[in-house]
Length: 585
Image (cartoon, rainbow, N blue to C red; front, side):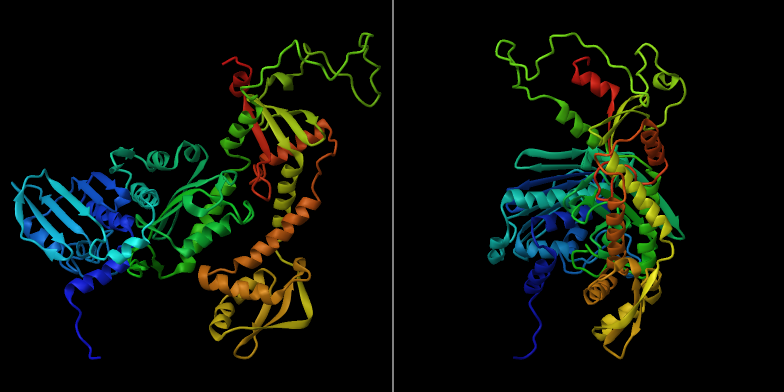
């Protein structure tokens, strides 16, 4: 077959296949156009999850009739004034969205430019552009996309149920709303208001609107600058986590992205605070010079490529770890909320005194206290509390130990309420942090017979670039021929390990994340197990002095609010919480 030039409508349909995956993709492109136009108010209306109708109204700068006719032409854009793909200052820039949408739907555009006396309307149906007509419309733009994919019906069968398509649109709009908190967003689906976010003055306000008060109450503010790299945002305490990464929002120059380098950095920072099946909640905003990042590597602009990914990753890991370190012994407020729900009796439980049979029969003789053991002091009368009990002096954050329950839980009184500490979980974290501090120089174990691991040439090169990083972790090796790696020393703490699998895992993660995270996680896992086996066990009786010593050490140890598996080490009940339990509030 001879080479021929494709027809314009077919070219647009091919582009639509890349850019417009589902209704949410069209919503993304159109809302990004509204933001680029300087809109401060954006309203989105969907019907059937966007399949029947997508209508978007904004109060941006609008378009003239001439601009309307050009905007639906392929690769026509107002967003590259210098024709420089490495100095992109807008969300959209490819000039593919409107002609692509118009080629597979019934597209109606109405717009009035700022300062203009009249509005114009343009219709494009199945790629066929109609004549421009005058219209009536306030300043700004209104776009309707009707019957998406009607011109390519084969693609309709790939759409999911309306509720599923709506959820994709909500997720996408939430990301855009977080990146532009000074803009008000409203989403209506089939006459139902899904959300209505008024414009905010701070990022935290918008995050509360989108991610809820639970996140804002347990989020740590993060801010770091390194040269021209600036990182801000909020990250959750480790004890507030989810079963997937759906609540991790990453932005580069205010553009929502899904980047493996950034996701790997988050995983590395939380690696010994959460088990691998749990994910923290966060919203991080990275700003770098535009020439340092390429946003033109994906048709939907959801992926980016950094010129120096190692520097970006190192900055992010460092910022996350410093922020988490500053949290000290804090734990999420949700821990106390769950405890409160557990304390509340079931509403249906109303015991009847007539039918109640006590399980304990009191003795006939009155109770007489036995003489106190010479080793156990007699308890002081309640009216003779020590100064420590009435908190005449400043009370430590975790209070003073008062008792031990079931030889497992420490009860401490604070100035504001009660703290219940899991002694094993708390001491496990303390031991683990001590082990991490002592492992500054990893002890290596030379192999009697070096291990030869066969690798592809590209894999061998990736591993060789991180020779020093691996050596710092105790793994020493070198290229062995053209397609093999010779391991001569390993971290002594690993013992007998499947080195071939470990090395191949390291290669995969170096290629994807730019860092040998598997080895760090393996060492951390062994340290965690060691800490678990050498910490105070549940069932061990502790003295008041030992309990208080544990509390004071928790207050000065980073991450002591959760054990090595991400579970909370203590629960705090405020005085008002307890008053609610007993109906005093």
